[in-house]
Image 1 (cartoon, rainbow, N blue to C red):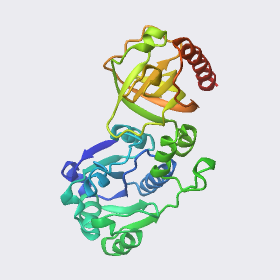
Image 2 (cartoon, rainbow, N blue to C red; image 1 turned 90 degrees about the horizontal axis):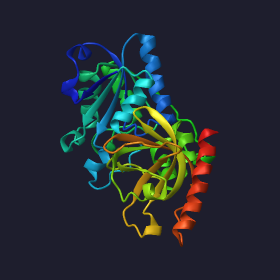
Image 3 (cartoon, one colour; image 1 turned 90 degrees about the vertical axis):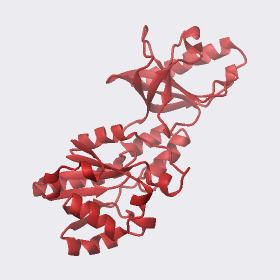
Image 4 (cartoon, one colour; image 1 turned 180 degrees about the vertical axis):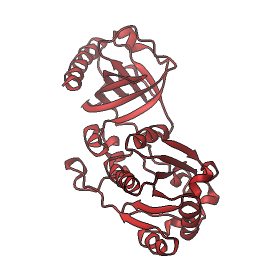
Amino acid sequence: MQRWRGLKDIPEEWAQGRSVVTIGSYDGVHRGHQLIIGRAVTHARELGIPSVVVTFDPHPSEVVRPGSHPPLLAAHHRRAELMAELGVDALLIIPFTTDFSQLSPGEFIRTVLVEALGAKVVVEGPNFRFGHKAAGDVEYLSALGLKYDYQIDVVDLFLAGEAGGGEPFSSSLIRRLVAEGDVAGAAEALGRPHRVEGVVVRGAQRGRELGYPTANVETLPHSAIPADGVYAGWLVVEGESMPAAISVGTNPTFDGTMRTVEAYAIDRVGLDLYGLHVAVDFSAFLRGQEKFDSIDALLERMALDVKRARELVDG
């Protein structure tokens, strides 16, 4: 899959041909996103032309309303990996600036869809909005298709299951589930476990002293971190997924104040992970954060947490 940053990065031959395009933030590349992107890939293959996903960096809300950046379900490199797995031919990341945010819906269509990508088919969800003050919608997009010779395919999103209470799949729904600690519900909507990434840094090293050495992950900015508590999941290092017990919180037993994400790779010894970029995949919520009266009480509960995490992850 080709990756372009900005319209100027698009090869000239692309502007001279046609393509199937879908546009959106696509944070998380959840099951609703997968449906839309999959439809775009199918159209492209049927027409014998490439498929292109257009997205933005930073998140548009941060430019339009500074300080309102939503928690992110996936970093851009992770989204690119997931899109490549779906068969996308090219990913265009447009730097979302104040000037770009001022483009009218008509200017957006002409500049991005027509002149830059030669759109033949545009695939979107029913609530897609674009252009200055989000004034453009799928009806307007369809109307200008007559002028610029492209077709619109509007894809209805699947409804989420019990975790979503019947809501359509959406990034906001998944952010809420993650914030509540419902990582199982988030996984249902994502189609995979929720992932948090970052570099392993040195912490207080209490886990090592207690016999449970943990990877203290310095998470990427704006990451969607699950609610404080203990979880079962996996620590992913250089492509290897290791069953893990994961702690999110401030370590209240030791009067901690800094919120951390720490993963103990179950039954693994001698791991040297400092400085490595790792991922933590959350599978199941085990319990909330607790303050224990003694180290012995903490150790007893940690042993139970690890046992339960092993059982859940190993199936």
